[in-house]
Image (cartoon, rainbow, N blue to C red):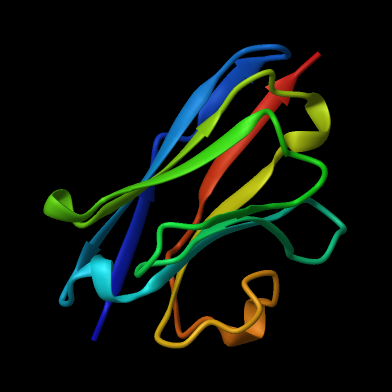
Length: 124
């Protein structure tokens, strides 16, 4: 089993920053592709960012490119999402996910494990 626990969410003003953390237990994160997704009220879950375990290549949704950065610390079994220049439309529950095999990092159905989510609220 792989357990993922997100932290770092909270309330922040527009143009502010937050860093989300995803701590893994049960298995080593380094052997999995990792992604961040979010779900806003009344909307479906959407892809935010992903990082491959083998190459370290990163992928971003157009809506967050240039503002968010995904990174990984294998020694700590932790994945991060640095969020800068936050906008009210970034308000959502953010979920960390892990995939054994990842052919399309933007598809939530390809991920095998999910965290419980952490709330991010951006005020205007």
